[in-house]
Length: 263
Ligand SMILES: Cc1cc2nc3c(=O)[nH]c(=O)nc-3n(C[C@H](O)[C@H](O)[C@H](O)COP(=O)(O)O)c2cc1C
Image (cartoon, rainbow, N blue to C red; front, side, top):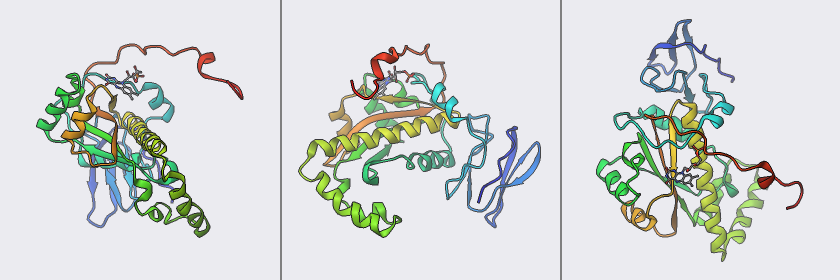
C-alpha cells in the first residue's frame, strides 16, 4: 500500500481516532493517512516538515530530502538543554535506526538511551566535559554485543527463504568462532552503521547530532554497566542545536581517498 504524501504545508493540528485511523489537519484540509500510524507532534517538532510512520515503516509525510540531510548533517557542539524529544519522535528514530545493515543481519548494536540527568553529568565528567553529553535531548551510548552471532542466530533470518536460512545460520558460527578480532570489527561496524542512520534520520526530522569518542571508555563502561562481551563504539548526542556549526572543516583531495581498481 502506497500511502499518500501529505502536502508540505504547515500542519495545524493532529487528531488520533480511536478506531486506529488517523488524520492530520493541514491548510489543505484533512487527510487520512491510514491505520496503525504513529505520530510526531508536528507542532512541537523542530522540523518544519511533517513526518509520520506506520508500523510497516512507511514514511507518510515529507521529510528532508536525503541528499540535503547528508550535506547538512554536522557535528554540533551546543544543544538546547530544555528541549526534549516526544515519545513518538524517539520511536521514529529507533524505527529508522534498526533498518541499518549488519553483517549476517546479526544486529550487534545495543543502544543505551541515557535519560538520567545525574548519570549524564557523571558521563560528562569522564568525557572531557563536553556539553553535548548533558545538554542534548538524547544521549545514546552506542554499544555492540560481540557474541550476537551466538545468540539464537536463526531469528536473524526467520523471514528469509528456507534455503537462505539453511545456508547462513550454520555458516555464521563457523565464520566468527575463534576470531575475536573479527567479532570486534563486526560489532564496531554494525554500531557505526546504526549511529550513522540515526544521525541522518535526526537531520531529516529537523534535529542535529554529534558522534562522540572523546571519553574514557572504561569509566563510561562502568557507568552504563556494560555487560561482558560488549564494547562501546561511540556516544551519540541528538537534539536541537543552539549554535550553527563552524564551516565544514575541509575535505581531503579525492585523489587521496579514491582509487581505481587497486591502490
Ligand atoms: C567516531 C567519531 C567520534 C567523534 N568524537 C567527537 C567528540 O568526542 N567530540 C566532538 O565534538 N566531535 C566529535 N566527532 C565529530 C568530528 O570532529 C566531525 O565529524 C568532523 O570534524 C567532521 O565534521 P562534521 O561532522 O560536522 O561534518 C566525532 C566524529 C566521529 C565520526
